[in-house]
Length: 71
Image (tube, rainbow, N blue to C red; front, side, top):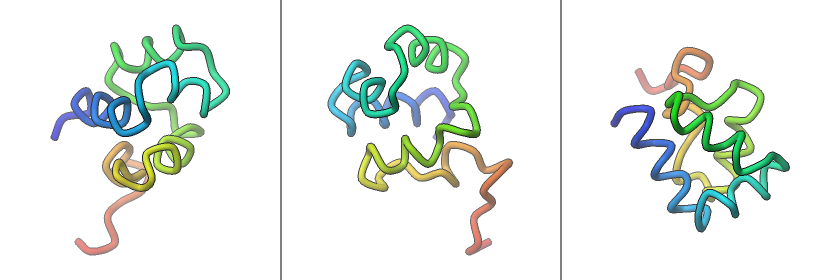
């Protein structure tokens, strides 16, 4: 799954971009920028993971920072 599709999945699971942005305490415009870029900033991946109930994990969003321990 690509980073952009993971961001899209996070949006869906959180109830929309506005809802996810609100949970993260950021503007919807900031989140739209991340979506366009296809990458969630390192200091926000845990918040996204929590906002999606763990359905989009930090390992999926930023494998460069959170390698999968099962590998």
